[in-house]
Amino acid sequence: MSVPVDYANPSGPRLEMAMSRLPAPDRARRIGVLVYNPGGPEAQGVYVPAALWPRQLTDAFDIIGFDPRGVGQSNRVDCGTPQGAVVELAKLPSLTAIPDVNAVDSSARAFVTECEQRLGPLAGQLGSLAVAHDVDAIRRALGEKQLSLWMHSYGSIIGEAYLATYPDRVRAALFTGAVDTATSGVDYTLQAERPMPQPPGGDSLANVFTTTLRQSLAGFAPWCREHAEECPISEDPVGQAKAAARLRQQPAPGEEPAYRTVLDAAFAVSLDPPHWPEFGTAVAQAGTGDPTGLKRLATGGVPADIAALLSSRPSTALLLGAYCTDFAWAKSVLGVLNDYRSAGARESHTPQTASTFVSCGAWPRPAPPLGPLRNPGRVRPLIVNGDEDHFTPLSGARAVASRFNASLLVVKANSGQVVGAGVPCADAAATVYLVNGRHPQRTECGA
Image 1 (cartoon, rainbow, N blue to C red):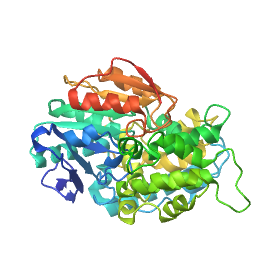
Image 2: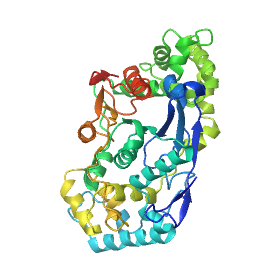
Image 3: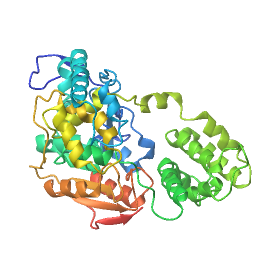
């Protein structure tokens, strides 16, 4: 699909957008279209992991995926990485003593100038509002009066911008994780780039393993329970996979830990339903002491065609194009540097974060930052947020919920993906909301 680079100049340069559609199987019972974005902002979205989703959603909607502008097959942007003094910032123990601030300014502006020369007007049109306009172009191309939205993590900004701009064109809006656009760029990046905390509790390996396994088996587990004739672990799919991991057993010298094999095999088949029967059999065999099947699946990995659509090569230009446009920053490189120095003086990761984003002080910003977006329409979004989410903290989700008149369901003891990640209460709430428009009565549920 062809869209304008700048919607304020529709007759100007254009770019090609890649999108996909998974049609609802029963056209007579189809509700409409559900547009999905996996976050990022660098994540490709043309591949949709529908195998992990509640079946009621894929039955009720045409599922629409798309690579946002500047990403993947939608005119991917790249102009390398900054050089010189900007890179050296990351090596400093703190920002209290920068050897040459003018050198930082010069190298940041040189990098931005090179990006503008490579990308042209697209450099200043990579923010979430432009992507929201692209989503409406998708709606028009499909001939739909309204869309249902499922926007995840950073993608929630696209959903917020769409709802604020096109309120009458939204049937329902699910945000799994919500980013507060009223946050400054410095504050948001310091939070997002902060090192992940250790999981709570005494057995951190077991906590991380269980969460990761549950996410990979989000589609397999319900299938297995419903198909006992094909799945020998149907009584407790996740529990038997955990048992096969032998978390408390030390591997022999030079041998791969059993938990790593289980995780690798589960991830390899997570988006590949034809191999679910093989995985169930392999787990059952591992329970009797034969891990051969799991090792074979782990070694084979994710099918190449799926892996190619899931992989997202890092792009500094795309990262800056989104962050520098969406959030408020100082108007100069040195101003951004001073803000990092003030806001993150006690944070060990501040120099690295400043090295990545100090160029926002020179990045082209033809429009104001998004600021505190609000919902002018009647549709109430549903926000489902983990209480330990690192990238979309609960405080931000609460702020978004207040401004958008949204209901907020907090998933306890959860730090990442909440819907389509093997959390039954989150899946149920999201499904009922998107299909029937009903908001959950409770405000919390457990992972």
